[in-house]
Length: 131
Image (cartoon, rainbow, N blue to C red; front, side, top):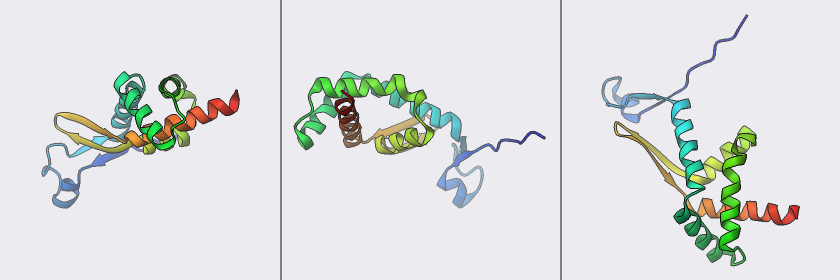
């Protein structure tokens, strides 16, 4: 007998406190929004200004990472994303995403620049250990 999958939704605090109809957003499908957040993260890994900010933050903390190291590290994440275990994907999202706000005008993802720097340092260390 096939098992049914359960739909998961994010529900606004307003709806939880005051009931359905009290918020224009109400509830939203978790899968669709999580996929949107991942798509935005993957695009972030390719943005030059994000790479530069990541490098500056990492350099200030450790001093031994170059801009090309940070660029190479972040550019490796996107093509390898689908090969990561779900637990590793979740760890990276938690490291990078500070907050996600969902409104009637769309989704706003607030990133942790220090999280990007930490991820770049981890990947750079892994690259150095593999060489």
